[in-house]
Amino acid sequence: MPSTKKIIRYIIVIFFWLWICFWAVYLWLSSIKNPPEATECVALVHWLGRGPASFTLTAAYLKWEGYKTIRISYPSTKDTIESLADKVWDDIVVACGNTNRINIVTHSLGGILIRQALTKQDPEKLGHVIMLAPPSKGSEIVDTFGDYQWFEWINGQAGNTLKTDKDSIPNQLPSANFSVWIIAGSISFNPLYSYFVIGRDDGKVSIENTKITKMADHIVIPSSHTHIMNNPLSLAEISHFLNHGSFHHNFTMTTAIKKVLSTIF
Image (tube, rainbow, N blue to C red; front, side, top):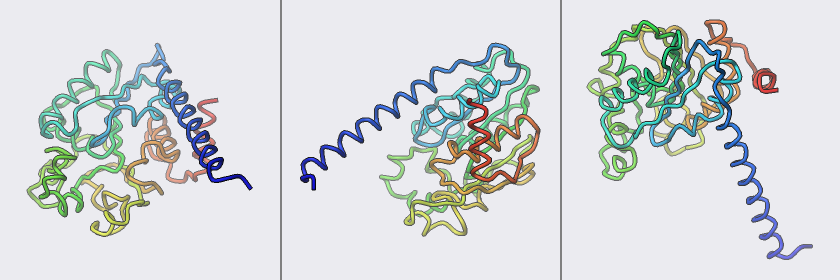
């Protein structure tokens, strides 16, 4: 039987090679270019405390699908929702350039920013907006911890405004006057947070609180809040929607993975 030192050494070596493989895949996905003939643009807007890297897999997949795909970067913990929304929208317009249509895929806070931005904009080229796990009616997590200084230090002013009360920014935004489609998650890996959330949730936002008035469609998939953008079911549904104008609704994890792999290979 190998000694404890050897076991530790094996574990370190395994983790080292996994780390190498992860970065190799990330760099490969990041190097994929936009198709030059693309006529539609898809803007990806990340969530609170993350960056455009969280959408690396989604961006690569949609490029393989034939879309000009851009990942928007913004300092989510450094400014107000209003200011961030203006910046994000300006960046989308510039990055999508002269494409015929602008579609938007958001994750969590990104959805609130787009709703805020569209209270001031009426873009002719706007296509569809797909929101992944948006805190459309806020989150009880912010209700519970938002008054603590450490919470705002971590999540910033924007994150601290995502409460569920009627005066919070998410609940003050008007009903959608644009085509919006929502994918919610139903799996939580955070029992502490889920304890404070009312109803089924993804570890941060309840399924019910992802919904907004006048949304075109709403589906629930087995995914956590953190990883929903990379879930094969999300990728398959986003692709099906962009290509056919509706969610599929009947993907299984197996058929979703097959669809994603068939696009890549």
